[in-house]
Length: 230
Image (cartoon, rainbow, N blue to C red; front, top):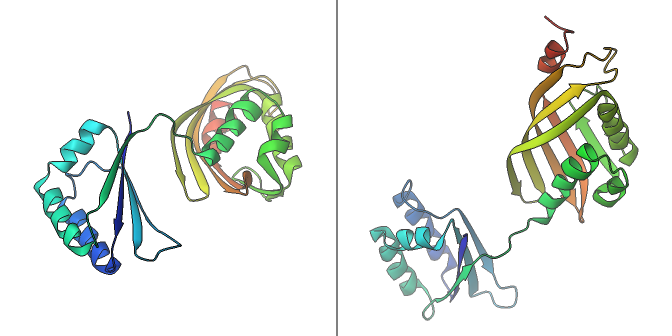
């Protein structure tokens, strides 16, 4: 279970605290078990800071705490703080990145289930689509609808998400696509062949909707599997 530690502290020397953390990161490279760290400053109080530190589990957090570098860093941090830092230890019981949910609705509901009504719910009206197989970018919801209907008309397919990462307003998904060729595709008559290809999709989200997308995948490999290329 993911574990999060919240460190709440006051300091009038934030630059020194930041420099201390940089030294600590360099000293513990390859040893620390932290997976994600966020530092926030209180807009209402310029000396009030909150660090949110994520670990794979409570056990990994404890292993990190027992590093000698961690103990030295904490002692130095206390000296830089105005008072003793306060700690809150949390077991994560729900973790949802809302932009990731948008991306997954595209793969699951729109692409694989063919629920075109979802396009209106997750794509911005002025969505811009950059697709390696399209010579010109498409703009608007109708463009993504056309592409999905074209692929669904040509293949019975599924996506398997191999890896996914969300950062800032973007969600990147590495996927494997498997499809059975059942209809005409780029001038190729149905072959009945089952094909696979890998690809990456990056969605940029804005105001709770997908605003822009980039699709990169092995079109040449797919055409070879369909017998259109040697």
